[in-house]
Image (cartoon, rainbow, N blue to C red; front, side, top):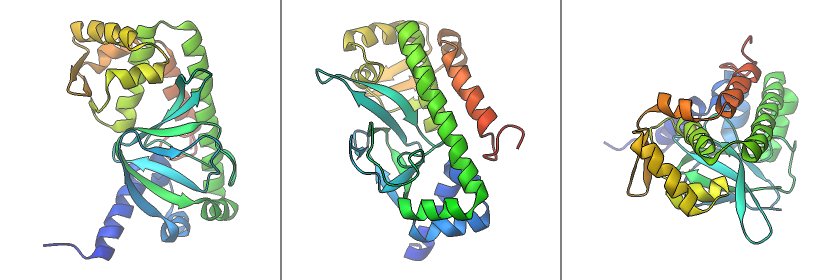
Length: 253
């Protein structure tokens, strides 16, 4: 039996508020300020949700396995990922405090769903709710920490450790051991040649840490990937927990 459209919409909104960690921390009153203007959309891998220089008019709150890659394009057409955002965060407008041009390109790396909230609605809610205002400030800190750690990681750590770190972050954000990702895509995210990633993937498969099948990477041994990864993975996750924690108020909140 088909559910009524309004019940389906309510169920989908419930999934967004449960599936995104920022939204999950909101009280009923805070949720009521955002819910009337919220829309839910499905995204496929490769979709561009925000182009470089585009004015941010809506924030996206990923859930249901969706992960977005923030990329900077360099001279010569090459690009590198500077941050990845999934169910723990939001894309667009959170840091800029309103409509502003995007400095990165936001591309869907892993498919899934997102809640879309217009920027004027968010700004009004931030002004009215101390928790929402504090939540987004704390998330901005956590996102900046990820970007800074990524800079240090790309500069000093070997590609094997960087690849393991990326796979661990992606697994956490997708909440799944199966990542719909090609080796070519991973090479672009890490800013290296495909042949380099092919060699790294072959080593990780030989160690039985991952398996690569038909355009997807399967994480087999998370603990093993942790041993291969650099300490950047733990540094970012520990800071995120300290700043936001399960309630959005930090580990002690």
